[in-house]
Amino acid sequence: MTIWVRALFVVILAVAVSGCVLQSKLPLFGDAQAKRLLADYPNLVAYEKSGQDWVKSKEQFVISAKGPRYTATVDKTELVFRFVPIAGTWWVLQAVEADKPTSYVLVDAQASELLIYPITCKALEASGNFSKFVKFAGSDCFIKFGADYKALFTGLSEAPGETTTKLVSEP
Image (tube, rainbow, N blue to C red; front, side, top):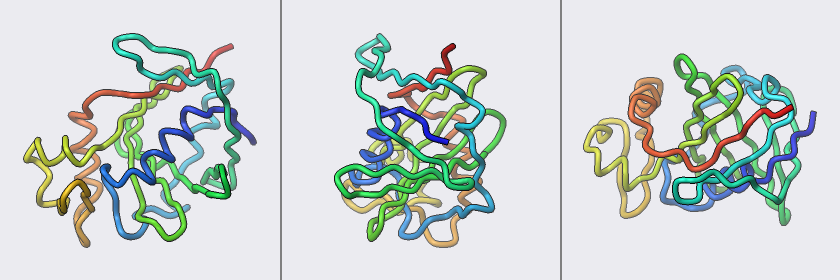
């Protein structure tokens, strides 16, 4: 299965390399916890937030499913990502790039669209609600070893902030 959505890849790649979003030293989730979320959303079209409007992404990129995970490659950089259910319509997207920390975003899987929410360190620290789960170091933030990450992601889904990207299943 191949899905053409450059915006999702850009969001994931930005998350993986930015260093100012929620990360962990090692991946928290493996294939056993992951689900093929994108299989339930045929004909995905990406939109990016521009002010108050949604703008359809003009560029596309190939994302391939391999079991319960997805992979994408650009400029010789391979990114492996998994969608893991949290509660209700909420999922966490885990993005792994070789020799880099693992990064996370939230996904709200609505009936015909996926809303993508970055988990920025600045917003996490400003909330004051996640210090028992997250270690803050300058502009970086890492999930603490042994932290209850199910409780962390459930709490984050209750106040996710603003969505930056959405993937719409269109006819």
